[in-house]
Length: 498
Image (cartoon, rainbow, N blue to C red; front, side, top):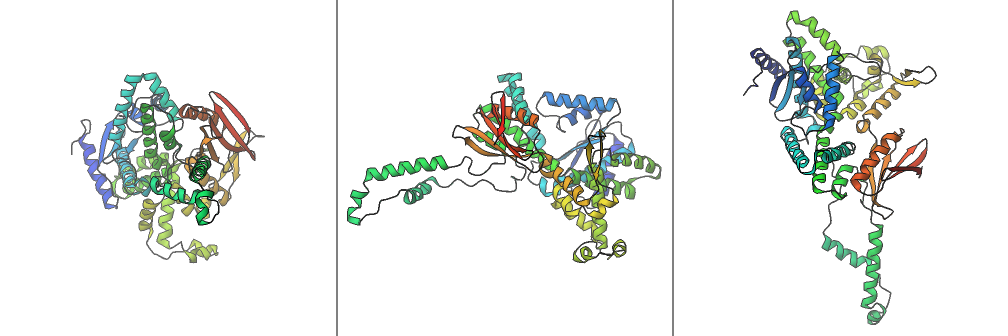
């Protein structure tokens, strides 16, 4: 293979060594291309989501400034970045020492294994690096033709609604196929046109041709008025806008690009805990069992502990994911699953339970292949695990003006964690009516699950949706047990009871 110019010989040897260990462990991945970059180049790449060929936009510059300041003040440091692609691209920080580079490479190979084999990544574009470059070229062309300000302003509008997709649409066929219009017309005419009852010899007089035509037109008008648009609630709001909003051709193309990129990144948001946990599990195993020299152990332990550390008020996906994979492996090795295990209520017997099945390694590879975070937590987060790792929920105490532990109850901890993972923790919004009140207005419905929308965010988003739709936009939601409708016409927002 052709190596990047700045790739030192010692790193090439490390790459081959760590790759061999990863394959020996059963990891399966696409070819991995490593690039060595300095911290400034790493921040630039990270600000673009890992794609240096992405279209230009001020948001990426803002994220670069945040990352650069975090590094300058010692608040954060990006050790590596890996891209789901075929081949996979990974970036190594030039200032990393040998122990860090080993850790990062093992981490990267596990990520690449996850990208290649997890079900939720199976429908992603494996040539996204090339596709992102195409998007950048097309958007730069639109900027040259229509003006940088106009195109960038339209991208701002699109990015404000980029999460309004249906992340399961790539696996489920939700929309009906359009029926044959000829057959539909024949069936409609045959069943729809009513005829007055009469004897056969009187039918031409009782049901004359002009009367039947009049009835046919009346029924057609009624059916057109009753037909819903869309026929079923549409979860992919971006697709609906691309298909039906009165956009210019270049605007429709830009919105389609934003939607495509949103679908590409969706599996990464759906599997954050699993993906980082899987990579952390394997970098720890590869280094402690195979790759570390004696003199490197303390440095590895220090850096690994830093990665696994829990910050106040924040859940560490690396820590939670790795510990859950270890817990699953131990449970299936010892046979702590199934009806017999679930029925056992003897705490001493449960503590010493060991059927010596040795199924743990096979089970974690099966889990890696099948689940996303939501199913992972739902299926494998147990009360024993919560108690061992001291998981709890917290809430803000207004009287004491601080956050405090709210509950250590397993059911509440699990429920809140699952809620935060449903639809990436974002509200579920779908299109209910594209011809609301028969005036071409757009009605959206918020699927309320106990937490109301932030009305300031909702109002700004409605304004952007109204710019895309070109007509008034309405959003039905719920707050404090009351149904509300937010209506946007121009810049004005009206809030009223439903």
